[in-house]
Length: 163
Image 1 (cartoon, rainbow, N blue to C red):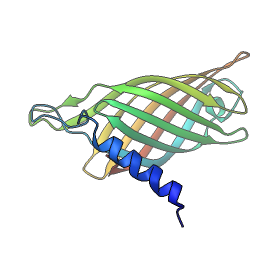
Image 2 (image 1 turned 90 degrees about the vertical axis):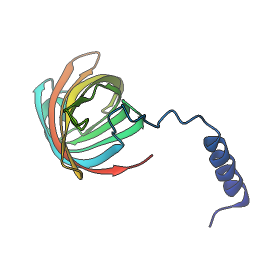
Image 3 (image 1 turned 45 degrees about the vertical axis):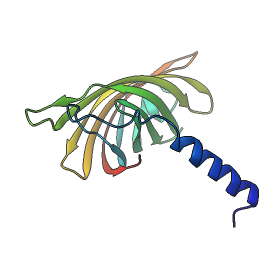
């Protein structure tokens, strides 16, 4: 059960968010992409031995849309030394003649957690597979003081609207 303080904080945050300008709304001329997703995939380690990022493994992937063309992309690679990756990414939608998004290339940076916190670069492309699923393909480069781990991630996510 929520405390009075918790309810007060929730109500204050809700009213604050309600007063923000509607920057996440799209005009009729812009492609519409409200998709966040969560899914599974695999990571093929291309270089490095610091963690599962460089060695490969099973992966849980997600994209959380913050505003149009800005998202937080997460993935966790499970292996001998599991790694979690968090990248803030900018996106450029590629559309067809009817305005539907056919691909969403992205590029961003963030952190790589593998027992240490180190910088990460992430680039890739999301491809909608109908209304419910998205194919994601990413190259993640984690920089460590001793080594650079590089992994190629391929996954499929189930789409949902978060905002």
